[in-house]
Length: 48
Image (tube, one colour):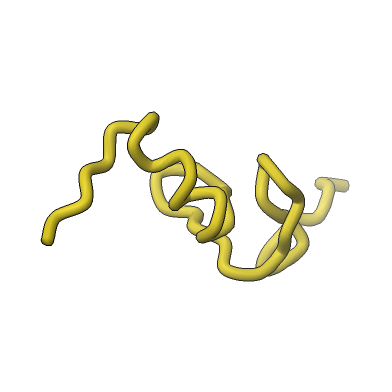
């Protein structure tokens, strides 16, 4: 029997553990607040 897959808000932010506002694109699993803090370190640039 295979273990159940986790969907939705079961998996929180890797950095702070929050479960709301998760950005999962590119396998990041960061909440939006942590993403804003870490974006320059990850190579994202803010335009305008």
